[in-house]
Length: 315
Ligand code: CP
Image (tube, rainbow, N blue to C red; front, side, top):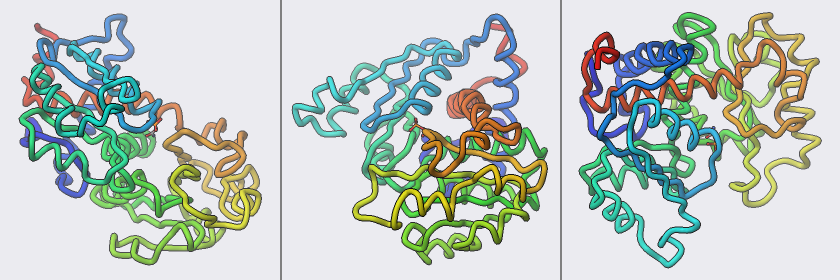
C-alpha cells in the first residue's frame, strides 16, 4: 500500500491497521526533514488547504497550518469569529464558498459530532477531521501512537492507560481505536461520573482506582479536565480530583522507570498532572506536538496519492 485510497480522514475506526502503520511510517520520513535547514518539500505545490476551526485550538490548528506550509500548499485560514458564520451562514454554505475558490483540502474542527462526515458526503474536496464534538480527534490518536512508537518501537503488547475525563473526550475515543488496532491493551481510569460503563464496548478495561493500574502501565495519557464541556459537577472539587486521579510526583515514583507520560494539551497543571511530572524525562508532551506536524504532513501526502517518498526531493 503506497497511499490512502480514500478521499477523507474522518476517524480511526474506519482506518485499517495497515493504513495506520502507513501513516506512521511516512511520518518518520517527514519528521527527518525537520533537521534540515530547508524544511519544505513540494508535495502539495499548487494545492489549496483551508483550515476552518469552529472551536478554539492552539496545537492542532498551528500544526495543520505548518504541515500544509511545509508541503508547499497555499493556505487559507478562516477565522470563524470574523467570518460570515457570525451572520448566520450555514456550515455547508461556508464550505461550498471555499470549494468555489477551489480549496482541495478542508481541515475542520467543529463542536457537532459528525460534522466532518456530513461535509465529506457533500463536497468534492478532501475533508480532514481536526476534532468533532465528543466523537473523534483522529490526528491526535495517530500522533499519540506515533509518539509511543518512537519511544517503544512497537505498541504490540504494551499496556496503555488513559486517565481522566473520558466521557467528554474525543482524544480518548480516537486513542482507544488507534492503540487497540496497533495491538496494545488499554485501561481507562477516571471518576465513575466521567467514565460510563458503555466504554467497555470498545474492548478496554475500566478502573476507578489509578493506584491499582499505574505500576503496570508502559504509557499513560493524562487527559485534561474539560471544564467547558461539563454540565454540572462530576466530582466534589478539583482538589479531590487531584488527590484521586492526578499524576503526581509521588505516583510517578511507583510507575515503571521508563513509563511514557503523555498529555494532549492544553494542560491544567496542578489538576490532572503536576509540574514536576509534566517536565520530567518521562513526559513526551512537547514531542507529541513536534510529531503532530510530521503526522499531519504524512496524512496530507497520503491523501494526495502522491509519488513515492524517495522521489519527493527530486522536484
Ligand atoms: N490537543 C489538542 O487538540 O489541542 P488544541 O485544542 O490546542 O488543538
